[in-house]
Length: 299
Image (tube, one colour):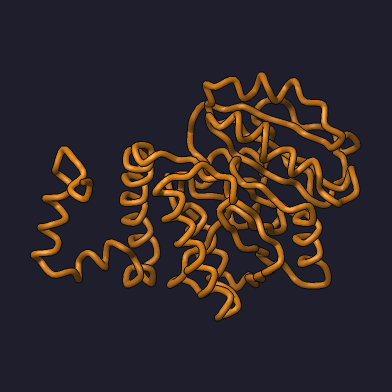
């Protein structure tokens, strides 16, 4: 376990005293959603799909972790009066790993389902995850993700749509991920809360690929990975190219180095390793393109 990974065994709630045991509701499933500055999508698309689940009210709770949002997310959440338990907590902007860890601390469910703030779930998704956990030992259950058909059109939307299609064609063919060579995506995954507590939660030094890092730790511990093809969720993708270049590119590069240091078995499968095997003239050409003040592929 990383020094930066939280110890959940004795952790109390971050924003208030721990409740008495009699005050803690009994729920089967806690849905944890970290969010930052995506208020419109969260309120108009993500949460309505969760409120429409065909699962008995009171058997699940939704925990939103507002990660330093500046777009009024907390104010809008406070206005909601859903029929299902909805809680939200706030923290300074510290990233998705810390936000998910904060959600795990306050969760009441036996199982934790992780969804992102731009993920739209089908009406049976919660039940499908719970059914996959019944009658078996501890397991990490995950389902496929596709791009939402009504997501705004963009080059990145179609690029991600193609990536998802190719990725899940492979996963379907081999009936699940195989680590360390495959990516593992947290955005439609569930597992027992106790498994997360025992492994120490998410490594908060990871600013990207924190899901892969957690998955590889659990894979190495022998936790069963269970792929449920029918448990489909949809990403309402709306990231701009500028956002991806400024945030995702840098974070993925930094965390890829951390992963390679932490898990030697990952190194041959790292995208950075692929760059190292690339011919020298191609690496030089990429560096020249990256330094240009314009897009060389634009007309």
